Image (spheres, rainbow, N blue to C red):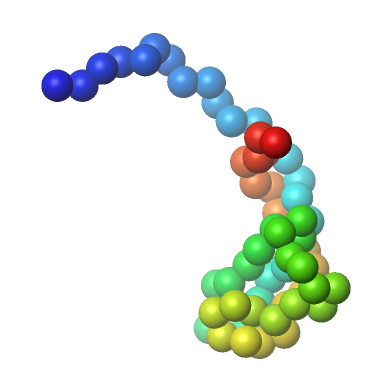
Length: 61
């Protein structure tokens, strides 16, 4: 049995600063606000990361 909660509100998307892995074979990235280091390394492959901007769903605080 499933219950309908009515129509869902679309989540607004905003431009977000992120760290992206520089290794071409790795798809790792993280939001800049979730990084504890000024120059983080990729948690998946330990390569260096570069800043970029992506359009992502806005997070509720």
